[in-house]
Image (spheres, rainbow, N blue to C red):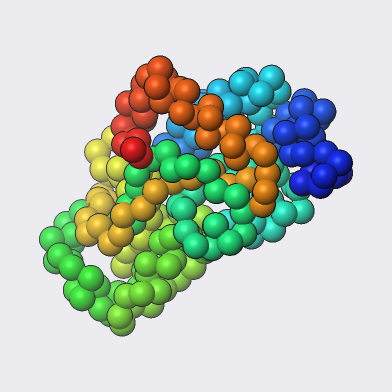
Length: 242
């Protein structure tokens, strides 16, 4: 993607020339996860493919190994977009061109279901060890809590595993993932979401000054208006942003 972001070649032109848009993700149900055939699916994966189709290019998924370095991957043109249930933060706005919001999210405490009732507010978490994804909104929330030991890990899945194994008392993850991955019929049947600590919005990050941002916003407005995006949100039990 040489020349992306320069006056000689816009991101849109570079993506069309390459015949693909490279979308940075992590394994994070219900936004992006592997189906039984080993193909990426989920709300964001389907949404990204729809946008790629609109552009007339293929959609290629690239796993961001360290979520804390997502904007470096973007800036160095390893990827063209960060599109994985990314919370719109000041950091995101500083380091990228962020789209209009598309889904409402919250950071919630997840722990053993039989212990949830003992932790009704933030103060009650004092003394706990809490696992979080490094570079995430969950980390920001955890760092704002008093008296907790914060354990930053590679991704939200790893944070869930720590809570399930008992090596952490709890984890703080996105509510979208918490409801998809815990409770009866899941791999984490004995875990449950409890206290909600913050409400936020998801957006897509493109490079600074990228012309893909406006193109995406226009496309999103179009499929919101015709009901396509609402149907996709209903499929994955998500709430669209206004």
